[in-house]
Image (cartoon, rainbow, N blue to C red; front, side, top):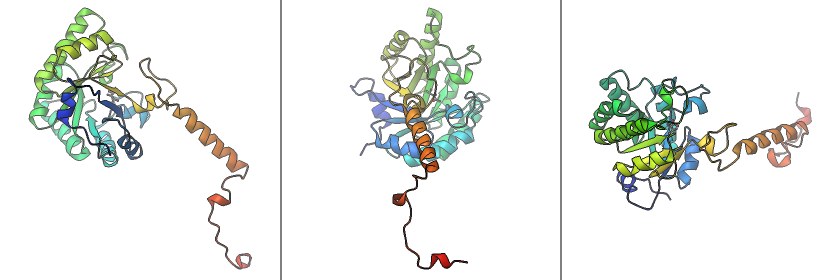
Length: 276
Ligand code: KIV
């Protein structure tokens, strides 16, 4: 049976051989599977806006959505460290409101920490949430909640100035008390450099092999979506497996091959033909 990774063990990965892994997960059935696997951590990400609710992006996801999905994931994955995402609008109004929303996601969702996007600008919010007793995972680089400001889902940190800004942000977040930082959509060389220069672990997504940990969106890496970004490796082709299964079921139902005797209740009822 897998043992849940602890926060000190996550911090220790900076100097150890083990590279912890995380996938997104939003429901009980899949949480059961992740819990049985060797994956160390689950992110109940605001990517659920796209994967679960059919939104175009993450901006419309609410605190209620995150709590709802986090609760069910936590129930299914008692041996996996669960990260609850703070959605857009839940930490950009005031520090008090950010703490209130972090409290709700942490307490009602039952997760092990919260994650929030943003660099040096949100460091005071990170500091306040940590001071309130909630571990915080930061997230910089390509931050989907503010992709409109970035002109779309574009690789970040490509100029020296932008790279310096990202390193400064990572340092500010470390200083504010974040225990780890997700680096999304930045050059691998920059991610490796940031990883070397801060003492909290980095978790990469589209950021190369030089990070301390790795995360992927489950639907992407399982091959459930039609399109995936360049940095995603498909470890399975579930889209084909599922579509084949659905279509085979339709075919067999129409051929009256399913349900055969094997899949029905075969009790004999005497005098059935006398029913009025
Ligand atoms: O919401 C999410 O899935 C994320 C990952 C892309 C890191 O934030």
